[in-house]
Length: 144
Image (cartoon, rainbow, N blue to C red; front, side):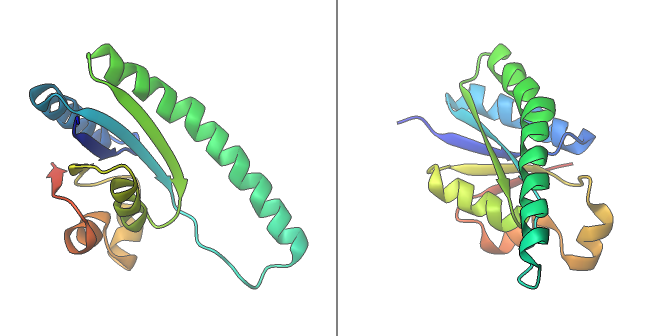
């Protein structure tokens, strides 16, 4: 069975370097690449039914926009490099969600960029790299 490399991708420069690294690793190992894009989302239990409905509508729109603008072009890029590829698009805490994706897909490795779009948030709430270093079920490669 072929290995799967999960790459956390956020369309930043660092995310693109992580994707390039994952493509190189996949070619060398005969592995597949699963490009994972996670949209931060925190559940609020104190919203009214109307607010929940509006939030669900926005969430659906964000997922469609991310699929079209981020994942579809990246999927073509990986496949054009001669690597089997698929995508995962989820909402949640990025580090925890990447761990869940890796488990669900039997991944052998997670690759992420060192910095992404949420640099201020990572300083306040903890970084994705820090979460993965503590919780990942598989080895993590952090690409500078």
